[in-house]
Length: 452
Image (cartoon, rainbow, N blue to C red; front, top):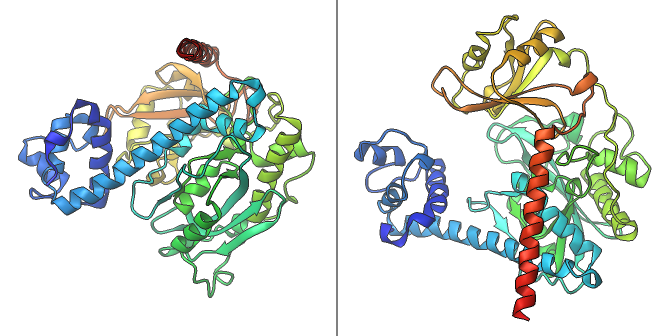
């Protein structure tokens, strides 16, 4: 059994993640499941974050030695993987700080890995069974790496809304070096044909599974290789692959007055390459998208990255203006819990649209004016999301999730536009963070000079 003496206060975050993984895998120790163990300690709250490191370590101590060895080993390997990425970022920041050493490819890697939104998408759960990770052993920042661009097709199954069904890998010359269809695991509910172009007929006879796809991509990534893609974390989630070095084209550029808004691939292709990504109405093509992401990187290598761009002047539809978008919904929350937030509002009560299991949905009103007035009357400070749309963070006031946070935002920014501007509060917070980072970098440079 895993003894609690192996751990201490500084291991709390590690232990929380391990116990959550045990919960998900339904592992049982000598005293049963995590929930059973808590009962034996006369504790009721099952959220691991609410318990001390001693309680968390105590549960792990009830697991058999083989069980504990496997689960702890996976999480320790994952932590080493995170440390390898952090070490790469540190080396890149030191190298790129010297102008004569700047390499456009490694600069784009650094820009991707240090983007404020990188951790949102790339905190990949590669400690879970079925995932693969690449090593940093072959990465050499003193030489030009090989670039490969990846894009995946996904369908919806009974157990996964983004199940892998196909992928393409394109090299720097734009040639496709890997293209394969992948047999989805589980019953397919929706091939998303309008997006993927896939149908039951096109998937007939497909025998490659996800592990075959992982092996094929992993084989291509041996050595000094950087993986390219647009919003690549979605593809990596579907493929269950966690590389160290990536260039995410969605994190390379930004819009004016929207520091954390990530431009779409279609908009970047239009603004940087002066062409359309695909013909209007044509389905998503992963080979085409992989090639487009690579072309954007090649363009940036030759011409540099553009300054912040003007956001597209897109109007939100009138029907959507009657709605408020709600997200970050607790998994156990019910529609009635959301509606309870509007009990004090003087406008008409909305209806809830969407599947609560997706942890997001819409609150639909009869008129756009009702939606605006209801949002105005909701308590809480107003800020903006990454698109510059007004948003509020609220605590649920009823139901089993009472006290837990949800976020509610408008469907459009000022004037019914899809894009707005960052709030003054957000801009001030980002300026402070930027100043903090500059001070830290200055201290690091001074320490380095002192050692020399």
